[in-house]
Image (cartoon, rainbow, N blue to C red):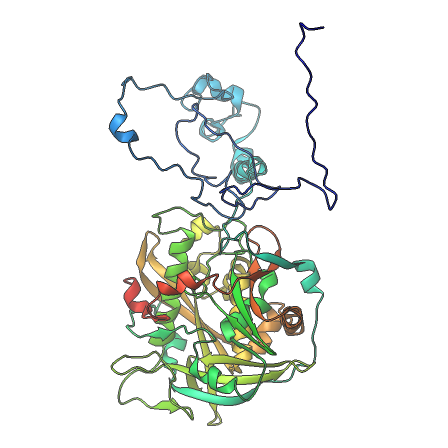
Length: 551
């Protein structure tokens, strides 16, 4: 027995107070949130010559890409020497029919494959393959449709496109609530009365009715308007700060309210910061956030790809749509020192000396949501027009933009806008349901009498800097909400549900985030200094859209 190694019984710690080890060593390991639905890829694949362009984020994390695991080299370049200079042959997987002879120009093969019937049928006799020229003629459309459906059939197995989160979830964030969209769609808060004006600021220019006669034969170029648009968040608004001392307990802007109330139609990720101080709740947007950018084809079957440097990427289209919307809303007004202006009771709270501000009228309105919840929000108008009875009608002016109808597989505006405007609008409702719903909610909250929609298209699909106005259309906000199946009772119910959840929490800072890849919203408890680093880089909360990108 002395020839065998002795067996030493290992010491096993017993945890009397719970499950797991008694002591956890402190390791400096970065935290990376994970999702069970993420695809597992290869660490290294030497057989692939080029990365996939169609699905670049196939193996990306649901919570976004992070560089915390990146390898940073210092002296590798100086010690690296290339040994083999011969290029390796690219690996080609097995392809069906790879060695099949070319039958496009082979007349003998056409009889066997059934191709080229229209050509041979012109000789006056029956064509090869046992069919006639007429059958080939009328079967051409059917074969074309089959060829188009072929791509759809093989596209079913394509990996799901993963969208990046609007904000990186940190390890010290505490998840409070997760609410999926089916639950939100069942909510309703009826009998909410029209908002009451408690303060009105700014001035508005009159709408130029000449733009109502713009059509495809009388199109107008879209001009660049160098005017400043302020995108001030809730807590930075001096009027809201003044009103919060004496009235209301929930404060927000119309953009933030519209985003939350239309969250069930959104696909892209967004987030809203909430600060609870006693009985008061402030809904804010983050500094340096892309919250104010307009989405393009967000709800379409094939949304834009995230191709860096492309004019048709999701971010480039969002910047283009935002600039178009700003320029159009100012161009259709009667601008000039001699032109009349409609002035509200107070001046523009964001007025700066020597700065040409855009035509904007702010209405601070109050709603009673019940259960001692009083909402105060800043709403806005873009213009004003005199009605047939001499009364003033306030306008919310927005612009839809066309970038490439062939890529989006939608109706071409230059052919259908004058004759089939309903088909064009139906296509936009299908591809931009969330954006149109937000615009409608903003117009309803502001009490606008009309919602003006402009149709703006590129002069050339490959040029994103030049645009033309092809037409305009106007709606009453309440009627348009019914037309697009927007239930305001449900929108108020979603907002009230989130407010009630936050009201039950202790004082602190919270964040509402739309999940980038699931139909749900999440509520997190975040530290007070969660986004302090973002605010250091921002000099001002507004920027002149006209100077950011040439248009």
